[in-house]
Picture (cartoon, rainbow, N blue to C red):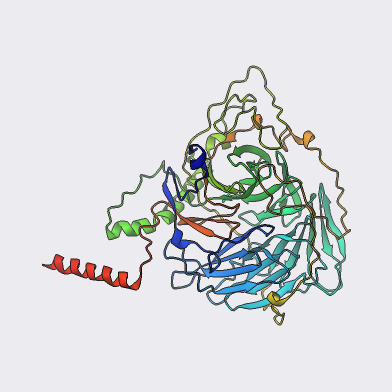
Length: 591
């Protein structure tokens, strides 16, 4: 873990950090924000969110970026580490009245250079389908708020589908929609399809097919986020009641659950191979859960406040099986450098296949993931094989740790510890900073995918004025920071057949649902850096950079080691002067 000095140094905003693979550097010229670059007053606003899509355009500049700030939604060409951002020319910009965008997602399956489908969820409960390239509004779902009146917390396309998408609300419900179906002029009626522990699934009861196709009621309080597994078969949900619930999406079966150490869970992500799930939340911890074993295998403590985003990095590979590249400045070396990340990712995939093969020697695997929080800090973590596959039983006695003392539990814990005489102290956690791992995403196609034209004619949602009755359910503020609006809200829909037996946190602590701190390995971050003035709300790992964003509306690009040689913005006069110098050098070399 990178140590920081006293007072002033700890509050200093970092613009670079070093890991074992090299130097990550902030690129000021690649910062995206509102065109005026004025910091947004985020008090009481919804979290900033960022979505990416690649249009596979022939120019080689096919990356597109969408982000929301307050009532505004922007769509830009994302130039990343290659060129400086041009904020004066957004492809599309929308300002909404009476509501705010809260989340969005591109359909990567149908995206082309001429058209892209973007779903946008709103604070008043609606979901809009737009095409920011054609600057069209195709459809508006839950327009009259008859399906759900609460804030949309997460919206995603179903993997492998051109028409199905899933929407989560702060009411604790999720809805499955089809873009080709209407929502109806009256409130939907439901019939029970399946019911289990703390969840129920209903179908829409109507003479003709209409939205929503399914309604999921999950746990208690807000459903803060969900994520599909890489193969699209499973769905991981985190709720304000502190539970992670993993479902088989097609069969609607509960696969496994996990309880936070304290408070609600706010974010969730899958490892690229689908074997592990990481969550973060109000206990200031990141928790690693094994999908195969259905148990917590590690926790990480480095944040000083709520963890708002967790994400795996599929591009960081092992430095143990490849020698570091030396750059001499030749054209051949430059081309090698450009393809360095892709080649290493491909070699990682082959090593993973070797590791999973029974007739070859095992290959060391380490997973890299990151987290950002309301403490304005970015943390990077390595999950190594001695944690994933311990050779000896874990000791229940932990006398020291590099992150936190066993006598100082995280915020909200009860401080109890269990010590068993005769157990030995486990060895210190590894300090490895390598990851031979790449994305292994086998998106399965859905049999229910329907192709067809989307009905048009719906008026632009940006012109609507929604007089939404503001529901303010205040919760006690976090003792070290402020909430970003992840509050529970009660659904006005009374059709909820789930038997909600409240789980006593004291009864789950120490069980397989929520092991005590000393019962599982405690990870420490490889780096933990303050990188913003405001709460962090975005963390995305791309091939040549890391993207972060804070509540002020600034989207920052951090170049990976060796991915940027020069990124200089010069005036026309300076450009001519540079060309003259190069011309002089060329003539001098001739003579």
